[in-house]
Every structure is written in C-alpha cells, then in structure tokens.
Length: 79
Image 1 (cartoon, rainbow, N blue to C red):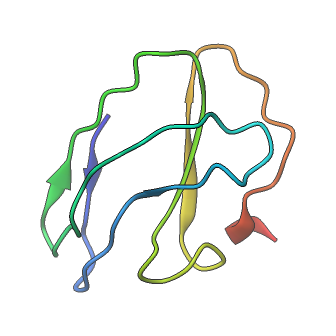
Image 2 (cartoon, rainbow, N blue to C red):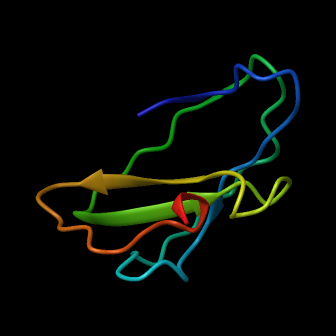
C-alpha cells in the first residue's frame, strides 16, 4: 500500500474511526509534502477509514479495505 501526494499542496492521513464499521487504528505520520509518499502496512482484516485533517473529511477521505470486509456505509466525502 502506498500513498503518494501528487498535489502541489501538503496533505496528511488521519484515522477516521467515526465512519460506521471502521476499525480503530493509529497512524503516526507527519504531513506529506508534494511528491512525498507514505507506505503503511495493514496486517489485520478490516475497514480502515481515513481523512485529510488539513482539508477536512468532507473534502478528502478514503478507506483501505483488507480482506473480505463488507462496506455498507458512505464516507463523509461521498455525501
């Protein structure tokens, strides 16, 4: 799994456990500057929701799905 920032502005990855069914997880990362990358490893089965705290969950969010996990909720940026 790799996150690569192709934007001209910085972003971060903040766990978002308020998304229904999302696993509780921690990720200690600084902001990712333009051109930067992050390579987290998700070893447990689950839904790992995240958001960019710089731009807000309604603007930038996503999820990593590991294993055969059902996703029956919308992410904040999908509304």
